[in-house]
Image (cartoon, rainbow, N blue to C red; front, side, top):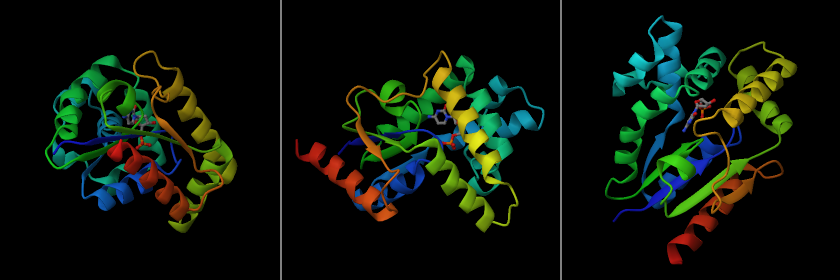
Length: 203
Ligand code: DC
């Protein structure tokens, strides 16, 4: 059985949490495509040319623990605007999407560019202020002393770069189900995501 679920949206909207829960619910494999761009961004920070880094990327470079920093996030957003970097990562993502047993991919362009034929598409969003508040709480819980204003500025800067780039900009696919999580608990957001996908499965 092949069934692809595409989950796109801006930074810190809840995509990761929702994608993991959806993959577990349906028993599908999950790929966080942001990790690919983060791995390339991390290599750029280490002095490797981004296109070369993308073309030679290895699975063991996708360690979330090392890639979830604010610096790597900004670097990822920068390398993600380079068309040759995006092109180098397409085949891996499409192969993952078409694996037997079903796949969930989350990112920015899954429903629009990587898997326009995906059976179910969600666009998970929330206001920049809500997203910055959530990210700030996460950072503080992890021992960081970053202030809210810095996190909000960071979120807005990444949104602007991801939405305004020429190649595969962040935007909802015309057939995506929009899930605004601003006023939802995690449990509510997951329940609504599963309900939207289940209705696609039945249809
Ligand atoms: O989802 P994330 O925050 O880990 O993504 C980091 C950056 O990678 C994001 O700011 C833009 C880029 N990205 C992308 O351009 N396309 C994707 N499918 C996933 C991420």
